[in-house]
Image 1 (cartoon, rainbow, N blue to C red):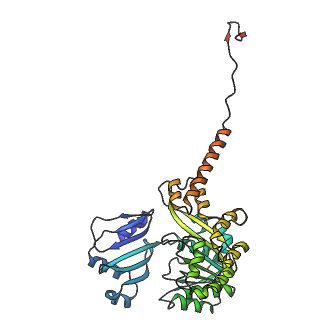
Image 2: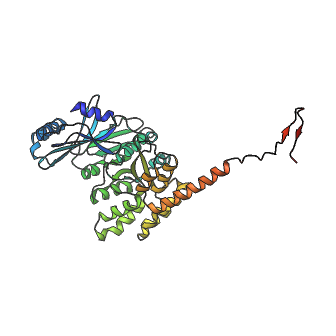
Image 3: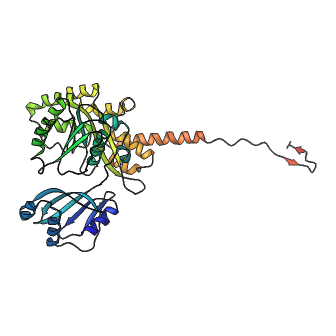
Length: 387
């Protein structure tokens, strides 16, 4: 098992799938590819699950487990976030690779504005995107930027702990759900009494967690968390939808006051076929965007204000960043078009850009100077022009 896992990690796998009745599979550059030829038996899959479960009590009740989260690591191989589940009455295991080295904004090639967003003293910053879009890496880079440059106390609530952070300029307290604290909700309530400057929650899962998170932001803390939403606009709507209709008016006001920024991201295959690149939408809550949230019926206009605020605030929409990635050759036009929020508008803008580029390139080519008729030369070297 360990040899297969190491081979997958060496090939750059982000996830491994181990399922009874199937071969080992790994997600490499976004594609799920087989690693072995022989299918695993239910007994083999159960044995692997037992090896990955760290807790003796949980191993003893494995036959009663339906869904189980933990982390696992081995020297020379790596660290993994592990989910053990049942399907067709047998076990399946999904392992997410966690790099030993904590990522930075530079390594992730995130826009420079991310540093400024992360340096906020208070408020909520949400990192959003579908599963497997790199949210954990971005959150780790944000934490790293804070604790390597500020004198703060950071408290994290994770399920399970993924990246292992070190105390540098800041002190960082990492708590694992189910091991160090009972739940996100109880851990978050307790965190408010632990003298934190920054609180990191692995995920905003329900209305109570969101409510406590907003309270943390309202009382002067910086709160970082994630949501499974595709962009900034839908993030606001999703948070409001978590609450009963009679509470949504108050929630919208609180959200407008506490939300500092939303970073939404998607991972796209690189044009050269090696690895993936982040496409990010970045919204900073300016006075104008705060008013749009407060008014409620104008939330649909937020995307346009993000686009307009690129030069002044460093914000950007997905489609703006996708255009940059196509122009720099990191992503193909076809991949960018499939990922665009407004595909028809994106296609039109890219066609306009290409036409302008063609015109500029043509204007830059120097015209060949006209040559006079050379006539012929006599043997004496005298030149005679025609006519």
